[in-house]
Structure formats: C-alpha cells, structure tokens
Length: 126
Image (cartoon, rainbow, N blue to C red; front, side):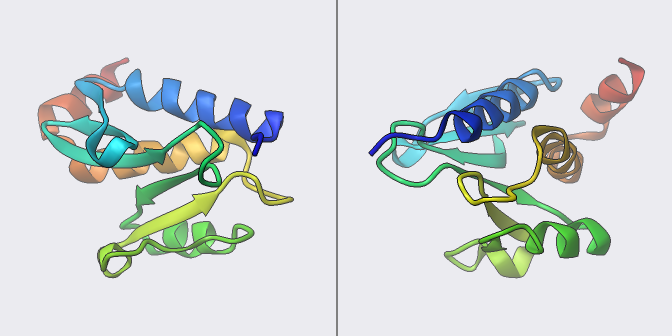
C-alpha cells in the first residue's frame, strides 16, 4: 500500500518541525516514531511505511485547539484512554486533512504542554 505523496510531505514536515524543537528527540517504542522532550512523548508520528494510514497524535489542552483538531476529517480522540487526557489522532491521508502549518501549530501546543519551562523559554527566545 503506497502512501499519498502530499500526506507523506506533510508528515515529513511535521516530523522535521517536531524534532527541531528544543530538547526534542525521536524514539521508536512499539516500532512507531515518537518525538519526546524530557523523556515524555509530545507527538506520536506512527509509521511512514504504508502499513498503517499516516497520521499524527498530539496533546491539545486548549479547548479551542482541541475542538478544532477534532473537526479534521477522520480525527478522533486517541485510543488507549489517551483521548480523555486531550490526545487527538489526526489522519493525514483524508481529503481535506489539515495543512502542515496547522499541524505544526498543534505539535508546538502539544510540546508546550509537556516540555519543561526552560525549554519553552528557549523556544520563545528563538
């Protein structure tokens, strides 16, 4: 199963943005890509090999951003009980999926919820 090019481009942009945040690191628990800060996941990137539809899962504390993310085509509260804590999975292969810029805004919001204050200060100083 091949991944649509535009979805893959968005995914690559989001991954690059996430890993460019202060203190961010990529790890592969469960064989999936995640971006962590301070040993805590701030975005689940999943896999890009076509075995599972491309998507990103972010933690959105702000009610507005959370509600907005859930309006994306196919978006849903994350599984494993994470949805209750504000995590939202946003598929990238759906028609009308959010633009990379908006996804990056959500990744940044998720980062700000999880990152230590000193790294947020570093981000704000960039």
